[in-house]
Image (tube, rainbow over all chains, first blue to last red; front, side, top):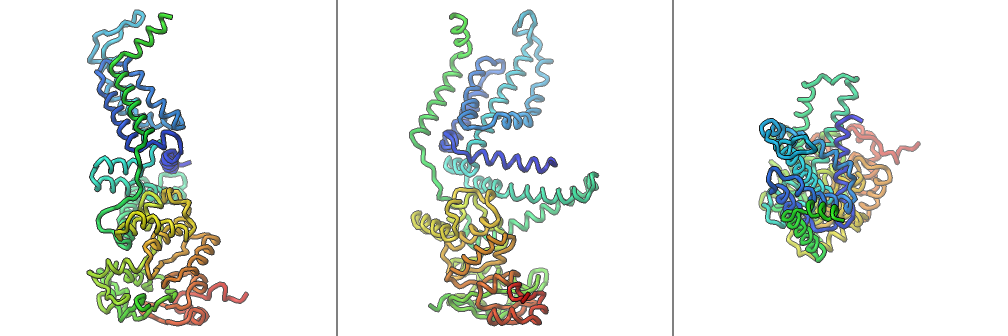
Length: 268
Length: 244
């Protein structure tokens, strides 16, 4: 399948995942948003040479992943796409910071490698948590949560429209690219030049569509404010989830769980 | 009731680029009528539709809806009376879920929460799409999108229902369902379409538009039998009337 088509269906897949019905999906979007945000804050707050203390934090994404029935492969793929950024951010650490920190069976390990690994673990934890938030919460749910958390209406409405028309626009692009490929017989379809005019056409179509949408909105009494009736209720389950999660984060952050566990195991 | 009348009086409209789209359109549609608007591509059908709820305002002439003349100050009132279903459901459905979309109009009318829920439920039941209420529009089929678009408008309980190409891109069964649905509506209906069989089934009266003017206005059964008139207007006999 051509790569653009693939991306289109990938996007659809992430969206379909978010409409499943599991314990995690049913949680109030505000609770998930806030919990994920606190999780990320905790992970990022670790000092730069910390590795072992961070490992227990994998518990949270693994929990969401398994209870939310999200396929691990899908998340790993997305993680891989975003990984070059994190890999390059710390790539010079091992060269600058060469003082040996640990001794691993005779091989000295420099501080640079340790901090590099720490960056990568932080990256994996934070990005997975964000991905899982999107995969287990419908996008409108996230938007509504933002609105309830007092994010300005303008931004929320922009996000809602972005979500709604992302699919329309990508489908349109897919059709144009398909039409080009069918008539370029394995060549690149006159390369850049055609691509530029395709982007132009898409832009014009988008402007025209936005005009028609505005017209449809006006016809139904739009006066500058978008009103939503859908409301969520934070229930007992939601609150207990948030409290448990945050308590666990605090324990993981404050105590060296890995070390305690290790000692327990070696003692017996 | 006399207030469901649409009266076009010598309506002219020029687009900013100078195109004369309407050149003196006059007709009067009274309460409960169902009227088909037909004509070649570019005859001015869509421009006419845009005038029905004041998206475009005539450059000359007057449009009177109910007892109110359409103008900048009155068009918001008129939009509550005239519901327009546009051609592309993707333009009509802009909210994240079907429920949010159908409730958009009623919420803007300032109804209470319970009234809005009532209206939405009723409208979605009418078009047989209640079970789709929590779906996002991009997960719907074309037929479902079309039905929901109609629900978004009837939830506002307009007196007059205006539709631009309602059967475009529908499969035969969805089209049949749509026709049955339209036949049930007791509203004043105005339908612009190239689907002459649909017009023949749903609309008693028919207006043929050509070059920005009313070319013919009369009973659908008579006009759509007039082969000469139809061919002059880039149309042809409806399939159901072609004796084969």
